[in-house]
Structures are given as C-alpha cells and as structure tokens.
Length: 341
Image 1 (cartoon, rainbow, N blue to C red):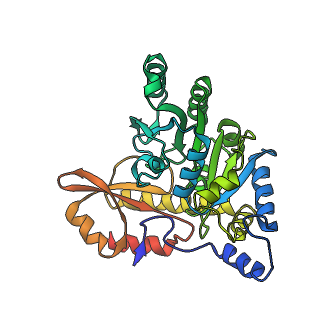
Image 2 (cartoon, helix red, strand yellow):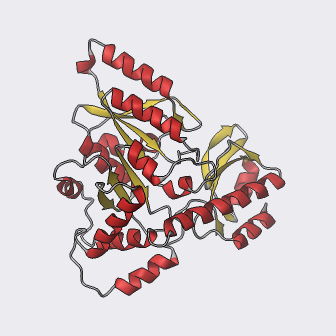
C-alpha cells in the first residue's frame, strides 16, 4: 500500500544508512562525547551562522519539547502556544506532566497572532492577583505549523519583540523545519532563526533521519547542567553517536536541504494532482502537508488502499484528511495515487 500518512513512515535516507555502515565499527565515547556529534554541532553552528550556539541532540520531538520547556521555565511559569499547537494538542499532556501549564490562544491558520498575545500579556501583568496565577514564561511556535502554514520573517520578528518586551523566551519547534525552509513561500533561513529565536530545534525524525532532533540555544542560554536535566528526564542516549552521525550526514553537502526540496517538489505535484481530480482543500499549505476535505464514504474507500491521515471532522458528512510527502515519496507513488483517486 502506498503511504501519504506522515513523513516518518519510512526509515532513514540512504546516505544516512551508508554513513552508519561506514562508522559502525569505530569505537567512540558515549553520551554525545563522540567525534561524530562534535562534527555535527560544528556543522550546525556554521549553517546557523551562530558560532556560539550550544547544541544538544535528543531522540524525538515530544521529548525535546518537554525537556527544553521544563528546563528553561521556572516552576511557576507556563508556556503560551496557538490553540492548534503541537504541545497542546498531540503530545498527550507531556508539558503539563513536567509541571508547566500550556496556555493556549486562538490562532489563524495554525499561527499565533500578535494581537491576542499582547492582549493576554497586558491583562496578566495588570492583574493584581497574578501571583496566584500561572506566569507566562515562554512562547512556543512551530515552523511549519500543525496546519502546514509558515510564519514570515516579519511575523516571527514581531512575536520575538513582544516576547522580549515582556521577558519571555521565544521557542520554535522545527520538527518539519527542513520542509518549511525549502518552501517557495519561505523567506527565513537558519541564520534568521538563530538571530530571532532564543532556542529552536532542527527536526531530523521527520526530515530523513531514523530519529533525532538538534536543540539549538542561540544566546549562550543553555540551562546550567543541562546534560543532567536531559538524563533526569530519561532522554539521554548512551549511544549518542546514533544522533551525531545522522546530523553530521544531514548537514554534509546540503543533504538536509535536498531532502526538504524533494518533499516540497512532490507536494507541489500532489497538489496539482488533487486539483485536477477535483478535490477540495481545507486550506492552502505551502509545505509537505496537504489537507483535503473528503466525503466520509470516499475517505473510507481510499483508506483501504492508501495510507492517509485522519485530521478531523469537517461536518457531519465530510472528513479533513492529511496527505504528507517526505524524502522517500516518489513519482511512482504519485502515479499510483492518481490511479486510485
């Protein structure tokens, strides 16, 4: 069965598997103290034009969000996000489990907007009873968003200005960052993100790696004893080389960007195909996630032969379905999909 269900249904890019084989028998120290991890960090610093960046590698996105957010916030603080934000909808309460409340705000097409954020912060800091409330300490955004939309550079800079004016941290979840950066609608680069954000992560799991995310602190602001914080939360990989080898490979010869561009090219072809077939889109996404409205009967029919993702009910008789492309999506997959559509 062909799969457009998500961008991590297949394993790792062949160049990563090849590098695993090449390095497999080379002894290396554990817990990220190996030469592959050191090389990966240096490559990421160069790509971000941020020579002082502090970088750690973790296994998955939820783990990275939970460790980063809980380590950077004080115990009385919470994190603000869009009401569609991943940490508030699809992480099973992982942030709340660390003792920090997720404070959600209305969003537009998956994006957090300045006006509701300013209104919330103004109301909070004017409240004489705020000591009895959860203090906002961080703003969380994702790029791309849960709905495959993108913040512009100006939009992200405006959010950063609001955060810094109120003493908040701006944290960007980059689980699908490679697809966002390579979208023709994107006007941001890794150096821009390093300049604008206080901390962000570069997603590997969904962008060609077997697993792994690179957490980047851009202001020499990594919490003290952060390695211990990772370990206390059960997130420290003994064989840290597993992550180092992958990110060293992803940032060699532009592989990360090539993977991103391939998935975007496939998504553009997918969009054209769906339009030609007369399918209706839930919204316009310039990234590798495409959301289509299907009649329920048609959704059930297609689900028997195609891997697609239920996103939610549109109305009593229609379902929102997500089609996703990735590093392994091929034109043969699209031809097979066309025949089924």
